[in-house]
Length: 221
Image 1 (cartoon, rainbow, N blue to C red):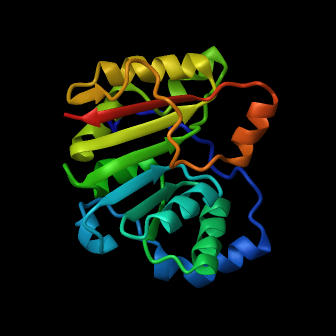
Image 2 (cartoon, helix red, strand yellow):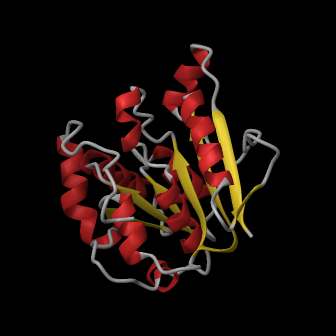
Image 3 (cartoon, rainbow, N blue to C red):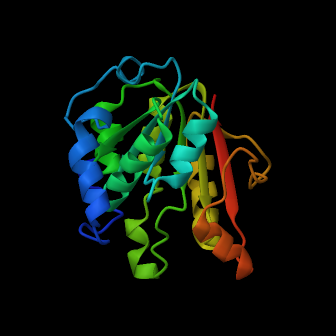
C-alpha cells in the first residue's frame, strides 16, 4: 500500500507563526515521537493501556479537548503540517496535558511503519481533505488499501470514526469501509452525532451555511 499510494496533502501549506515556532522548538523533544521505519510499543511509549490515534488533527484544538476530558486514555496525534504541530504543542503545555504524544509525519507512513498490529483502541479522522474536484479524488486518504491497513492496526473491538461535510466523499468512505474485511458498521448507514466529540470552528461555520456533517463509525470484529 505504501509503495503506490498518492499523498493526500500538499507540503508547505499554512503560515508558521512565531508562537508556533517557539512551541515546536521548545516542546518537540518532550511531546513528539520521531518518525522511524520500525514498529514501536505504542502503549508503552504512551504510558497508557488504551491508545487512540488521530490522523490529521489540524490545529489540534479538538484533540486537546478530547484528551483533557479523558485523562485515562492515551492520544497519538499524527499531523504533517508544522503549524498544526506547533499549535497543539502549545495547547498541551497550556492545559498541562500528560496523555498526548505527536508524530510529525505523513499518517500513512506512521500507521504502516510505526504502529503494530492490534494495538490501537481507535482511530479518529475528522474532516479529511475532500479533494472535491473529480480529477483529484485519487488523492483522498480513505481508500481500500488504507482502510485495510487501519483495520489491521486496531485491536479487536477497536473502532475507526470519520467525519466529513462532503456527501460524495462520505458515501465513498461508507462504501470503502463496508467492503473492508474485519470492519463492521456500528450503525445502519451513517452514524448519529457522537456527543463526546467537540464541534470545531470549521464545523460551526458549516452549520451556519446549512452544510450537513456525515459521521461514519466502524468497529473491528
